Length: 130
Image 1 (cartoon, helix red, strand yellow):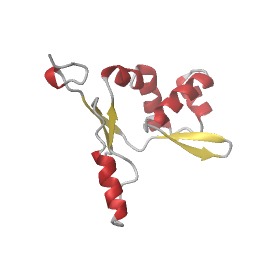
Image 2 (cartoon, one colour):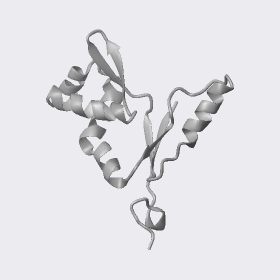
Image 3 (cartoon, rainbow, N blue to C red):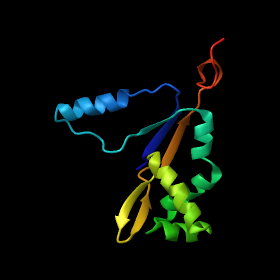
């Protein structure tokens, strides 16, 4: 089953998903524990988050399901401190979950597809109206 993370570039802080979730919780309704949409402020931030080294890590996590960040570093043939920094950044944005696994942290992704919405022209958040 395909689980898709939707990424959109949106400079305004759209909190409607959060407000809907809070309203559902107040009404004792069940809610999806994982948001399916990630809003990124601008193209520069998007480029930093989804740079090739981070995409390589996401693919390795999905394909190999490493038991620790150290194991992930071996898989991608990189130094563990660098991988730790990248995985922490990905976790800060909600792209990776870090599960306790003894003394180690196991990186996990809940999605197997990323769908990106990049506005261009007048609708681009990086373009100020004239």
